[in-house]
Length: 415
Image (cartoon, rainbow, N blue to C red; front, side):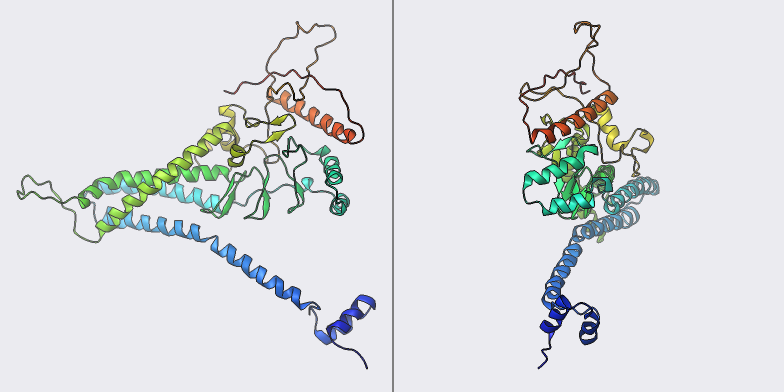
């Protein structure tokens, strides 16, 4: 008796080559021999689609509030409530300027794709297979250290290891982190913002700052111009004498409800946005991300919260660029490529390894002038240290050296 069914067909596929045509004939092309796997994948795919759809709810809410505020201000306030033509024109001009810049920066923040690590930070195929087969963390780190010798990496994990993302299977560049919501590694990741349904990082951090600035300006302008009409609608004249009663020519229509609610909403958003905007301005001045503000980056010499700070002016230029005429426009002008960042040399503790700047043979140490190193010299010195430290790390796995280095460095003062 010939055995039939999925089990028999599966055995013929696994042990008898050339039987795939018969399987396709009996079950159809693309039929799964393991239908349970397909049933498990379907709910996961549906759940992921539902999560992506629900993530747009905060953005839709903000969009509806903005659309309503436009109608309430332009139609209900400027057209139906304000009687002065000159006041209407002035209000409408400044309102539309702030509205356009706010919507433009918000749009760029939402739809600018986060920047990801380049291919050079991916392990070669052979090294990747070796890494996946290795079970010991020490051996895996050896593979990562060899691959990192040619990469511009200056930060480490808290344990001093190479930062590697098992999910994306890439060596993380400096200031790069994995976003669980976006399920990707993001260059210079700051945070994942649900109000824009996007990850704020190197590619759109300037847009996010401008979004906060113009949304604050938008709410302040609405609150300031609506205040007088809010008071007129809120208060009632109780004096009987018409001569002593202030003139109130506002129509008693449903416009007053829009005006009252518009002031409350604008004032509420002003308070919340002001605190967030002030915090991010402080981060820009210090050249830190939100992640680095709570967890200082770890360099070869130890953790340092000011390791990427180059001074106030240079820190501002890192985000907004060198040309000031583009600072207020939501166009990309940030410096660098998001993969490498200039660092400044800092004085380290006596217990930590330091770098010695040796004088020339014909000069004594007293004759050598002490002056701050330029940014290019600092970066060159960092490159040399990186190569030397990588080689030392690989050698120390077989032989531990008892020698310690003595370091004398000069720090570029932060303006």
